[in-house]
Image 1: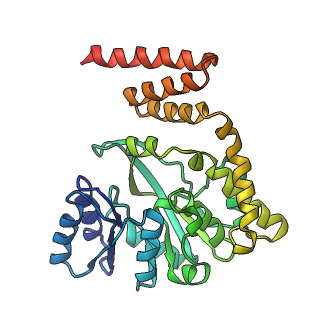
Image 2: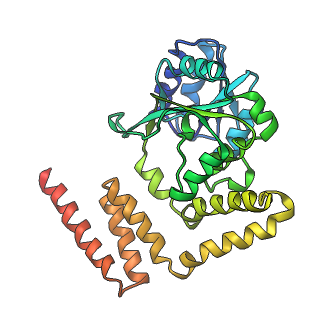
Length: 317
């Protein structure tokens, strides 16, 4: 469990592990220099349950490097993840442990439920039950939709997988996409399956989602596609040191349209802001988009929609 400024949610996250019907677990929590009460809350749980171990980073590593640090420390035969602002169904570990052994596979995930900041359920994920997914299956789905038929938030794996494949590639640090690349990479050699049950509750933090939109995040899926397309067609892994320049060239090419038209980055933020009903955030970014590209009509139509929607919210109050 990576922990960073999640004081409002970490208690529920930890309790969801303590309450598991499967109780032979070890919970490793990496505090990434939280500035709120997150660490204090986690340490309170650790003082009462020796299955919980706290690791305090000397400097902020970011999600990927923090995860890899904990992953390296894990001693169990099976490894899974739990974000500090999410929670798990009480039977998650039991069902995933039984599934991975009964089906004789190496990695599994489950379906999930999206919840808002207040923990209210908003929508169900679209993960179908599949007992066996190959690299070809995962790649084909990702190539078509830039989306995987696996929910990476609830990955549960035999430790032998990461012993052979390794952990997240540091190239993706603070860029996102490390989990999509990892599951594609792992499925080249190991069997993957999915459960239909909703075992994970994923909290959508709108401010985190919108603030994390950058040129890196916008080209991320296309970059991962290029990495695995090159592997399938030529047997080349662009994340190996020998191909670092090739990877930079592809990344630069993908970023070019956003660098040339920065208004499109602002507009992506606007679309996410509208989805999460963050009207002030959306207004700020649509004005930046208009300033960058003042003759694009869709920006003005969007501005009118934002103003109309925000005024409606105010009047309803």
